[in-house]
Image (cartoon, rainbow over all chains, first blue to last red; front, side):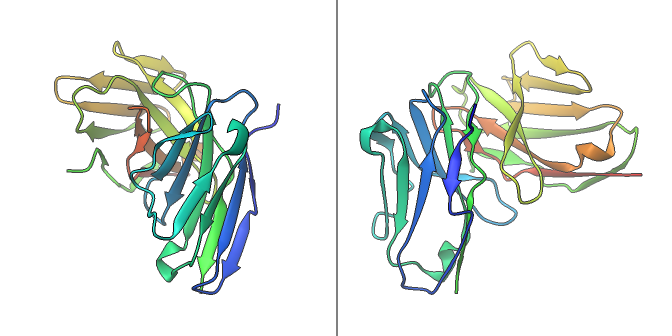
Length: 115
Length: 107
């Protein structure tokens, strides 16, 4: 069974440019998460989807970040314009149901470098 | 106060040693907890769930202390392959992660 698939794996962009990340969760998983992980830190939630609904986006910097999960399957996360401080690893995860003792599976992440 | 706090370490231990570390959480109503393992430049992967009664998986033992709001992870008979960052996770729907505890097992 395929795991969570993310692309691209690496991205280098100049500041003020836009960038987009894509995630395809495990088939059948209703819940999809986007996390950002800075070096030496744990992942921090940006947004959580239940099917196609964004149920927790309180930590998403809405002035420059946007996300969508059309049809409740794959998802994209966009930054426009990117800033130097956005350099991080962006992780997508999925689980069958949130709020239960079920495991969340992570993709390999997209390592973003803003120069 | 952060939702989940961990001792960052690093814990540098010889092979065969026992190492243990804790994680505290702020929400007393939290019900579900995990330990994830993250290798360098890799994604986090589930190591084990943490149950109220405590649970063991081979050389790994997890404990939950609700009264003091902490969970612990103990690794017995450490192997070189146990070298990693261990992330404490509180599952209040949004999976809140600690910053991780780094363990290095040396030969």
